[in-house]
Length: 154
Image 1: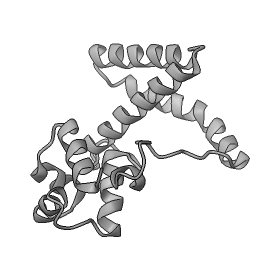
Image 2: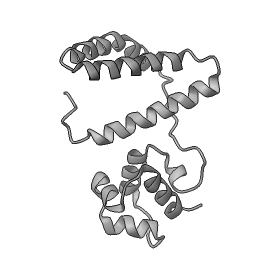
Image 3: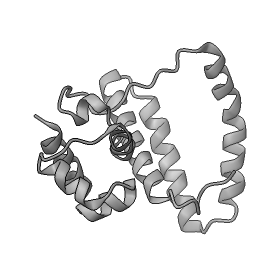
Image 4: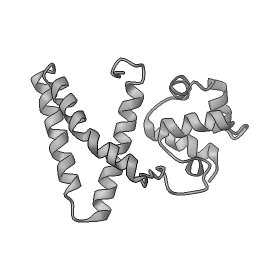
């Protein structure tokens, strides 16, 4: 499988047009068309944009691997300690944000959190990893949807 086939598969499965992909990634529409038709291959900047957009590795995008999602390495104990230490603050901020949300939004977030806890408690490691991967992919899609900056704080 080559990049042309893989890119088209990813785009179609995401339910977006070539124009929408071009707009979302900042890559020229004609370039997207050329990539999918096998006339050109993305340069390194375009590859990074496509990898980020679809949350895939370059190897997957080029058809060199069947592993879709990048490996996340959290091996540094200091980074993990900082992440663990930030959980209470993140939860407190979520709670504060929820106070201004509608009852329907609060219920939706509650359901998501209950399901997340359920996933984390799965004894079957393969099922747990698959579910976490699915949640991560949805999170990436939501990040793309909100990437205009309106939902970001900072």
